[in-house]
Image 1 (cartoon, rainbow, N blue to C red):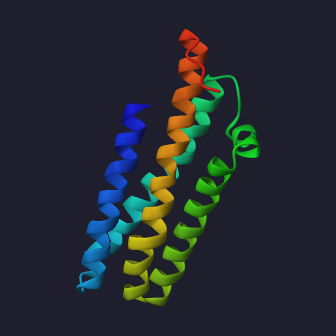
Image 2: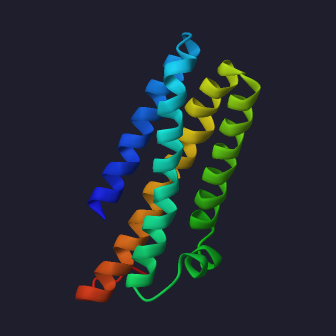
Length: 131
């Protein structure tokens, strides 16, 4: 789970760097990096889904019982949709603002998703269950 959290932290850093690039007029070269960021963000869901299955549950079941997980999934999807819309419109200031605000907040919430999965794994492997 540590590598998943490190990935989240790297994506947050990339989001801030990209926001600056879009804000200061480097939209064309940053477009490729934006697509790479959104693809990497999508892998968070894939990774959490795979980890959930390995732990004997589903991400959907976890989201149904844990509002923070449900919000993290929804907020990331909404932020990526906003980025796509603003990029198609060529509104680079809105892209930068979305990266700094919505994307960063959504990615930060994913730390909690992976912390929850790590807690489930610890409980399953060594009985270190937290109530």
